[in-house]
Length: 84
Length: 155
Image (tube, rainbow over all chains, first blue to last red; front, side, top):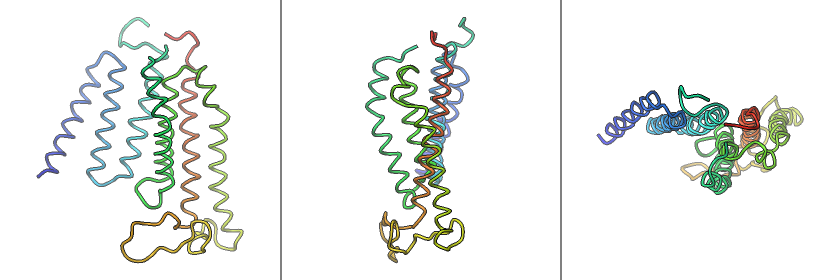
């Protein structure tokens, strides 16, 4: 029962954060939403009893991918469709 | 574009703790979840945090490209050295010649339920350490090369 509730909460958070990635015009905020999506995926892996994969996902998905996107935003423009 | 003072101070504060946690995951790879790759990725996340917070000129005085390349090479050398060391004692390639030997990481595992002993499992912790050092250097140098391509003026 409680597991079902946590599963539903995490999956609802996944859908909401994916929609936030789609709708944000500020690319830095969209990157942070993608990082939060990765963090929720890692929580889901941990609930499904795969802590190995959860550590990998938290380090690579939520850490390094976000860092690479932030560096890319520093090299280009921050707002989508704006003049650079 | 420079990050704000809050980001730089937070990165300086968090960097040693992330480093220690990643090295813990590497060192306990044969007992707890995680291992060489996961711990190395956690350590590389700490390095990436510092790289994101500072500009390229400030980062190169703290984190050297040569050091990261050396970590990658030394990790791979230790890994293949552990494999060839098994040949040197007459066992097959990559055989676990240190387990139950009483030497480094060589204690026998007690039977029954127990919390786990760090000083077991033979050559596996050495390979975890090698893979951890190698992933640390490899993933950090990817982010470092990303940063080095930003033009000087910035936006």
